[in-house]
Amino acid sequence: MATLLSILCSPKVGGFTEALLRETLSGVREVSGIKIDEIFLPDYQFRTCRACYSCTRSPKHTCVLDDEMGKDGDG
Image (cartoon, rainbow, N blue to C red; front, side, top):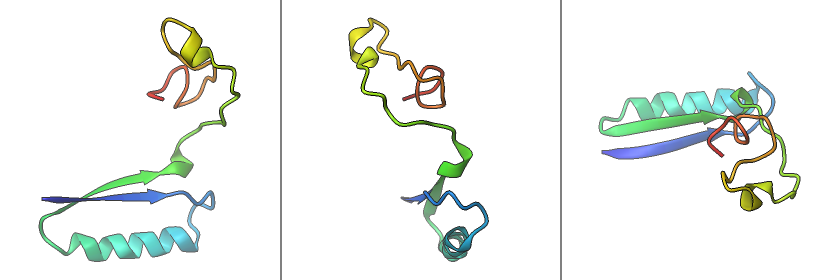
């Protein structure tokens, strides 16, 4: 079984890019044997790295940013 990774990066929810991606995925769903993994970045809250190096200096290797990728996330 093939897997297709779909990532929407546009910050404009409900815009043209999202509509185009959804239309494309609806065509892919008609093909058997393809699993679709969808990631919509507008659904996540994350900030840019501050380059403080806490993630490498601390024994727990955790980020100081309190977002979905940092302190409480999987980042």
